[in-house]
Length: 205
Image 1 (tube, rainbow, N blue to C red):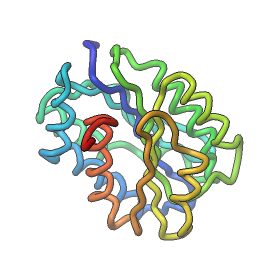
Image 2 (cartoon, one colour):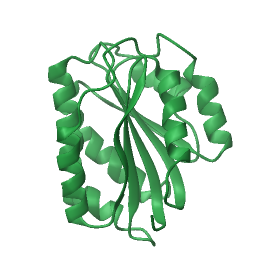
Image 3 (cartoon, rainbow, N blue to C red):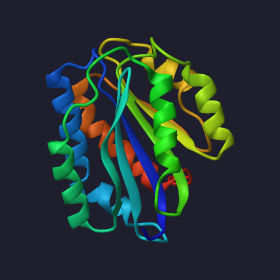
Image 4 (cartoon, rainbow, N blue to C red):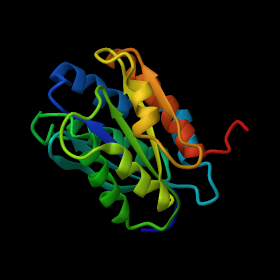
């Protein structure tokens, strides 16, 4: 795979707290984002004109939803959008093993076939970790390796989740945590988040 400006893992919470209607809203929002002109302009706007994206679903276990894909055109973004809508909900719903999900996301990032200027894990979910390893130490290992972790907290069930993400999940140069009120607002929020990640930490400064 040719070099890219960004290798991005989208790590998506599919634990039991995310029902099937909420999952559909979340995946629909991600799909819409890759058809959005601003998102794809950001994806193609760097020196290398491309990003690489992979999608991981996580719960107590983790499953690769979409393999590494290089996005360098609106057509490739549209194909990613279609593939997202077709991705099955795996693994089965379970506890929110956020730390284990981060470990899987970092392993996936290490397997990216494209040389990348930046490496980012984009975590989205609606709950703090309640099973498996703690997320903070995993985050620290990632940051030491030069990886940035950002978070999108859906706060309909845990109003202080963005505070937890800020303390225990995000890290690295320019990292940030965003929140959205519920899964209905996810599509707009994830679009803004992707633009910010793809443009990089110096955007807007």
